[in-house]
Length: 210
Image: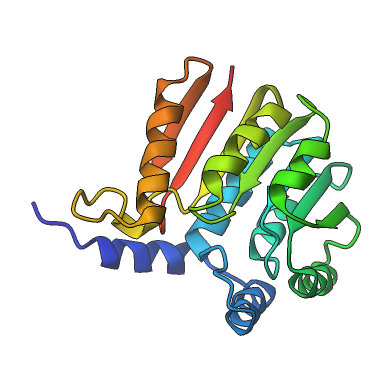
């Protein structure tokens, strides 16, 4: 039986829904030449976060706030989110949208800098959840550092894990695709992780640290 994956994706996006603040985050992201977290991935991130109820979470890749909003909507107001990005202007947009979404009561600290440098300064085994949206070329360096920041039982969520199907296509051998393939293979060999690869949007990998 043939399947129309594009039609499935469109229906899922419509069914899961967005709001005006989410739409603004995605629209402004284009002005900053940033890729925003797609709607279905945002809904999945919020759902997973609400189940985990993290006391402390990290976001790698603030962008203009689509992922930040998704995380905060799943977190309690007592939880602390640390969001990292190299673009201070994009982070300023995210801060404004947090207010418009009535999430300003949440505890958020935004740090501007390279993910590798900032993660190295954060406490080891002190976080319940890490969401990584650092891009395929940066993910191989960021993910190991992020895993070290997780406490036992903590969860890491990697966005853009399949690059919309490019990683699954053996004829595609670009540097970013090769980098992701090698990362996925390396993670699969680790005995201290439970993994789940979801074929939604550009792909989402969920890892739980034993």
